[in-house]
Image 1: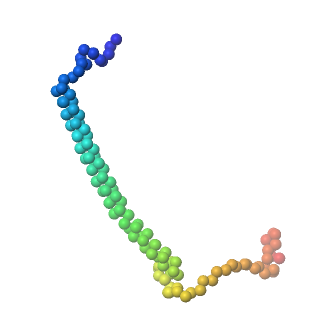
Image 2 (image 1 turned 90 degrees about the vertical axis):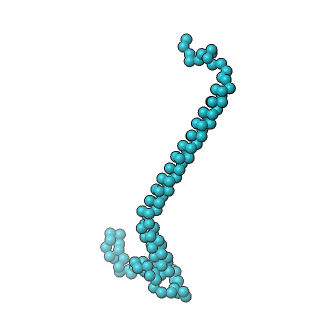
Image 3 (image 1 turned 45 degrees about the horizontal axis):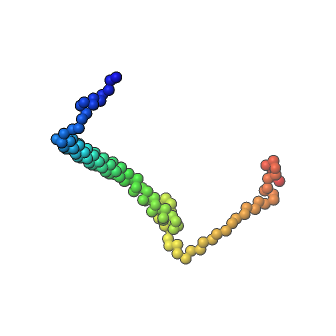
Length: 117
């Protein structure tokens, strides 16, 4: 039987070996921590760069949306849709609401076949 464990070599380690193992472990953890800080810094700078690029490229779209919103506000107060200008002050105006019914005169009505009756 072939095993990778030799009980004759696996005895207790000396104090110096344990101290060296602790020092190597602490140095490995420190190096991993420093590497992760560098990686996080690179990711943060890349993310900021992407956000600034996106912000810069969409500035014309944001300006157009802002102008459309202002034009829509002008329309809600009785303005012209194409120019975005209002027709004048709307204070004191009358709002008329109602329903309409279309009444077709008898001589202009259509029968079932589509002919005038």
